[in-house]
Image 1 (tube, each protein chain N blue to C red):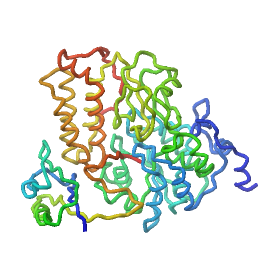
Image 2: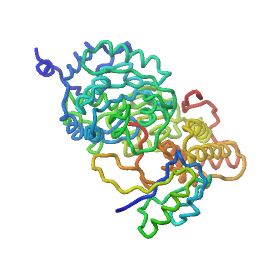
Image 3: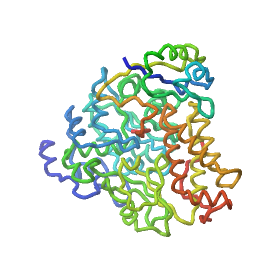
Image 4: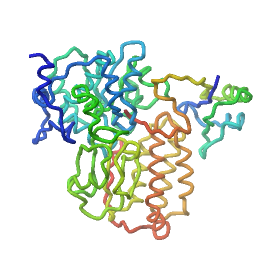
Length: 87
Length: 414
């Protein structure tokens, strides 16, 4: 099953451990907050992802299995170009 | 006489003024009786309204442009009795159309909420207005008193703020939490007010629903363009003879809108289309569509005498201050963008344009809500459209726009 790595931006305090533990998928922005590759995490790298998730002091990271609900608004990814704020 | 017999006597609005077809010339609210004379009574629809809305291709008019029918379907597809929220909070300072609707034709908005509630099986309808919008609240309270139906109506005032009207912020506020966005999922359609599946719709979107429920999808599609049918309300401000709220066919050109407003009162440097989450353009032939970034329908005619750099810096600072303060990239990134633009405006330091573009890219899609995305878009557009002016500021500390008056409105800081 395809899994993507997400950070909860409200929980994240920018400790930056994740980028050290999983540099293949996470880089830090100019203020020290993680920018996560929106692509599905290859199964070979899943162990790295899990280590980053486990070590996050704020428990702000998680792997999310792709869910497909045809009627639902799509979960947002980094590359999404759509704009939506209010209804 | 039955409701459908009465309805057949009422003709659908034939011109571009649909939502505004019944507006009184004295600016007072249209009463329920007057509303029924013009549009006919509303026969509450069932779930068939959802496919009608899908056929109409109506999209949300609050800025998100999400297909309305699909949103209702998503709510109706959940377990549990849904709640409907009519969103008339209108946090964007340059926008006035939702306020105009609830003050002038409140029953159109309320009918839309009732029709949507009937379609998704909701009993409870919450009408949300901004705390400071006292007149809006009074108009809605008076209109609600006139109505006799079986819905549980509730009128709620929400803390003022640019992000308070974002769906999850609104749900949080209605549940007694701070009016700040949450991480999605869960979306309000899954878990909203009181944990119930919640349909949050902008006031103008609901007004369109009220007319589609009466006159059908085909009628709705008879104006506008194929990909974006119907009309939309525009909040037009800046250097035009008659600023105000205009109803246009989607696809109308900026120049046609300006002409309708009595033309420009002085030479224009640019147009801000889509408000503070939108972008600048110098192209008067640009068509007003959601695809082109119309958003919640704000258009500002920006005069050549004003300074686009200073004005954009001022708005960016306002938007940075309006961050809910929850997500690091938004808190730090938007403040950095505002400071960077201010430094260029004041010719302090070096050419920071590349850094501004880098930061705008970095904050995109990095928040719980779309606030940073909108600001990033506004800043990128400023860098592109006011490039010559930015260079003049870097060299001389000013451009040809000498007039320091504020053209772009911002709300008082909370």
